[in-house]
Length: 240
Image (tube, rainbow, N blue to C red; front, side, top):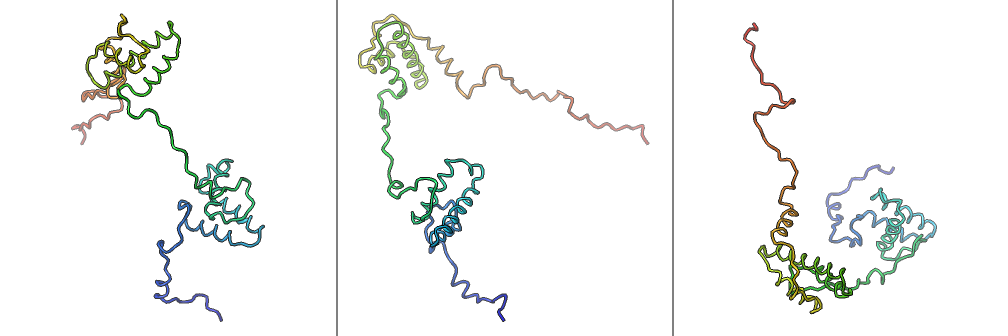
């Protein structure tokens, strides 16, 4: 008669313990080792029909971890791709999406082309340089003159934001002449930029540290008795 429960030796249990350092490396650790074992078992199935059923069941298990994205078509495509990746591209099943390859997975993205890294006047920023380049391409006229004045005023505002001091218009015009490659020349112009005081006031208004105008301030008045404040207890000496 077979025993229902077989007593094991404590030494055998300790000797057969598995440590993570001795186990196989998980390709996508977020899904855990149990799901990795399911994929390994499905890969070893010889019958194609049974193997396809096992793959669909594993996809359902993977989708249950993110139920809010289970029925999204793009998310299903991602699950199938992860299934083949976790099987080390050894799982041979019918996929509703193109099967990824190992070469595509190991491709490195192209290096990004960053803009100007070391501008001469960093306090102006790269956007000012882009605006100046656009102004250089415009034909002379009222629209270009208006754009040049907007750029010059913005340069003055940026200068004051970083230096916290007054600046003459001639300095801004010299920087504009230099950044435009000599195409925008306001050195001999009689145009005047916005007042320094107005620009500084605008910068303070846009700061998060300043309380916006019109916002009520909370005042703590100890003598203020609101309707929800409980009345103090008074003892009635007439009661016996």
